[in-house]
Length: 416
Ligand code: ATP
Ligand code: MG
Figure 1 (tube, rainbow, N blue to C red):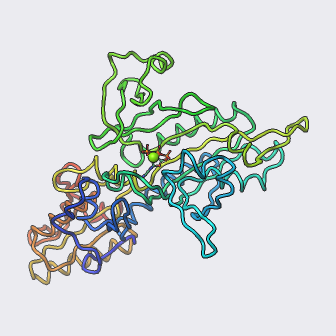
Figure 2: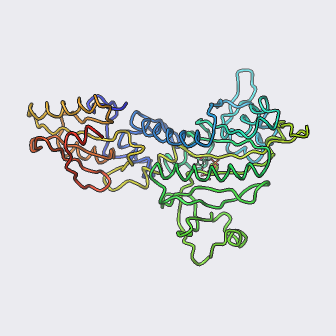
Figure 3: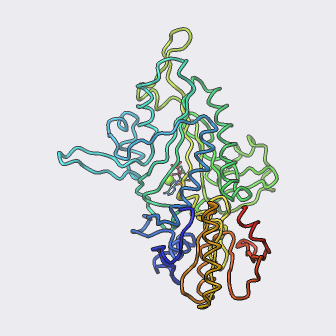
C-alpha cells in the first residue's frame, strides 16, 4: 500500500473514541481508523495501522540483522513440558499464562515469552563451541493475562513482540553482545522518532545478573517511575531505587529527576538457567560439556507504535515521524466541484503513483474542514492541497509536525 485513494479506504474516521477507552494512544488510533478494539487489551490492526506496524518492524528487523540475528518464527501454542522443566509452567508465571486444552484434555499454553522454545530448538542444532555465538529472533504474538489493560496499545493481553535471544559460550561474549544490542536499541528508538525521550534505565536483574536494563520513554501515560540523569542519559527504575544502584552507576541522587515513563524495550542477561534445564550444551575446545549462556532482548512492537502515537500527537491528532508514517504525503483535493481542479489533482496523484511516492489521496467529495480535520487526525507528515487557488507550477506543502507551509515545485515533490 504505497498509495491509496481515500474514497476506497474502508476505514472511516470518527469524532469520538469509544467511551470505555481511556488512553490517549488508543483513542487517537481508533478515531483515525488505524486499529479496531476487540475487547479490553486486545486490538486488531487495520490497513493504516498495519502499515505503521510494518514500518516499525522493518526498522527493528534491519537493526537485528545488523547484529547478526537470524530470523524465524516460533509457534504461539506452547508445549507445557519445556516450561515445566524451567519451573515456569506453574508458580511465578502462572498469573500471566493464558492456557487452553486440546480435545483429549491435555494442556497447552499460549506463548507469553519464548525463552524455553528457542532454547529447545537450539539444543537440537548446537553441539560444539564452533556453533557459537549465535543470535535468533522473531516477531511473534504474545499472550498475557495482564491485570490492568488501561493503557491502550501500550499494554495488551495479546501483542506483537520482537524478541531476540543470544547464545554464547561464556559471560564475556554475552557482555560484548549485550553492549551491541544496547546500541542497536538506541538506533531503533532514534529511528522511530522517540530517541530524545528515551533513557537507558537500570532495572532489577535476576539470579544471574544484578541488573537488567530497560529503555524507558518519558511520558505521563507511562506506568513506570524512573529517576533520570539527563546529562548522562541514564535512568534508574523506582523498583530498584536503592543506595546500591546509585553507587554502582556513579549517579548523584539530588540531580536525578523523577518522571513517569513507558518501558519500550528491555535487555536481560539470563545466564545458564534455561540451557541447564533444557539440555542446551556445547563441547568446548577441551571436549568438556558446558551449558550455553543466554540473553534475551525484547521490544513490544505494538507498545512502541502506541508510544509514538501517544507522545508525538497534538490536540488535532497523531503526528507520525516520516520513518514510520503510513504514507509520506497526504494529497488533498479541494475542487469544490470544479472539474479542472479535480483533473489537476488526479494528474498529480497519477504522477506520484508512477514514481512510487507514498501517497494517500483524499479524493472524497467532502468539505475542506472535514478533509483537514481528518488529515490532521491521521498525522501523515506532508499535506499537499490542490484547490482553486493553487497557482500553477507551485505546490503548497504543509508539514504536519510544525504546521509550516513549504512552497515546493512539482519536480521537488515528484523527485522526493
Ligand atoms: P511490563 O513491566 O511493562 O509489564 P515486562 O517486564 O513484562 O513489561 P517483558 O516481558 O520483558 O516486559 O517484555 C519485553 C517487552 O515487551 C517490554 O519491554 C515491552 O516493550 C513489551 N511488553 C510487555 N508487556 C506488554 C504488553 N502487555 N503489551 C504490549 N507490550 C508489552
Ligand atoms: Mg509484564
